[in-house]
Image (tube, rainbow, N blue to C red; front, top):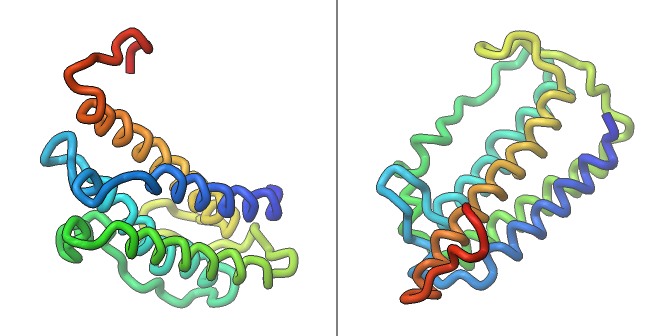
Length: 170
């Protein structure tokens, strides 16, 4: 695994998330395609909490705190428990970006971390530090896709009464 490339990807992903969200209004940020879907605001706040309470923290535990139990997390429940959709988008985005900068600064302090270090995950079994880093980058990409899907959903409002079907199937 190319550790430096993963760090760069995390940096770029943060910037892509910023760009995707930058022109969304507060009202748009709270809209959902369906009650079971997440809004842009919920995605951004999820990314913020995951950045500070999941990936960076657990990567650190694998590398520097072997055998210590990981603090519990409940990302799916946090969406409603922490009332993500009632928050301010610009503040939420800045919170995520600030946390991502902390992560990047911390990662920059790691000198050739041993990505082969392992912990036993209750679901995944043997879980390497490299698996956590790969999952961190992949998590961003999954939510980048989700944000693009939400942008397409919001486009429907912006172009109504016209139809973007000519562009191709979504």
